[in-house]
Length: 278
Image (cartoon, rainbow, N blue to C red):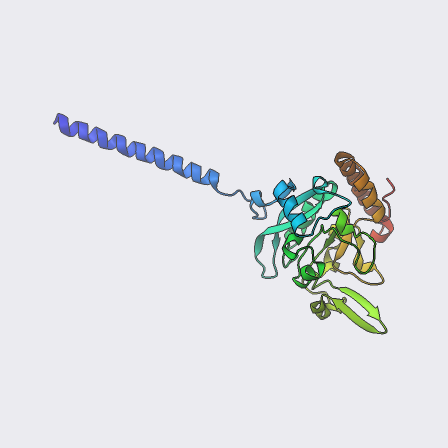
């Protein structure tokens, strides 16, 4: 009888231990699972981070960052974000490099685009294209930082500051007019020549989103249209590059607030831009 009782007690103790271990394992599993934002994006894949030494080396290796650049890795930030693809699905692999002063606003731009279900084909770093802008836009890649000149000129591009963003280049091509002939870059963008017939992924529907976060200059308003292109003004870019990171961010935040205050008075986007003389 005593032996049977001891055996029963041992079995119950083992069962209690097993139950406790199962509970602990479940808690650890839940803790280890990726946390999701309200939009279903993994928290470890959404945010702003400094440029690591490894990424900086890779940018130099792939001609995205060159000698004499107006900003270096210490003034750049990596923005990770989720986005809705043209397949209607959520993708957690969005990456873009921008100047530190605007990084938080850029993250908010892409979160807003996702919440609006504005589709993005892909958002890969320019490292994947060896800094070749033509290759990036042909791949319909959304991107920002790339240490280069404005095409066909000697002027430094706002992309070299990390203060210009190209969105869905195929749906939003660069369009040149010459002797009555239109030339589209990338060529696949010719399908989107009619800007009055709004199609999915076209920039016209999100101009307000970019402007509300400081990227108030849209290439679609230019005589030679660059529908994919959003940027800050060149004067603002020079001011941000000259200041310390903290001063630059404070300046840009003030500029955004001035713009938003102007818009709240009922004035148009165009009448509220050009107010970066802070």
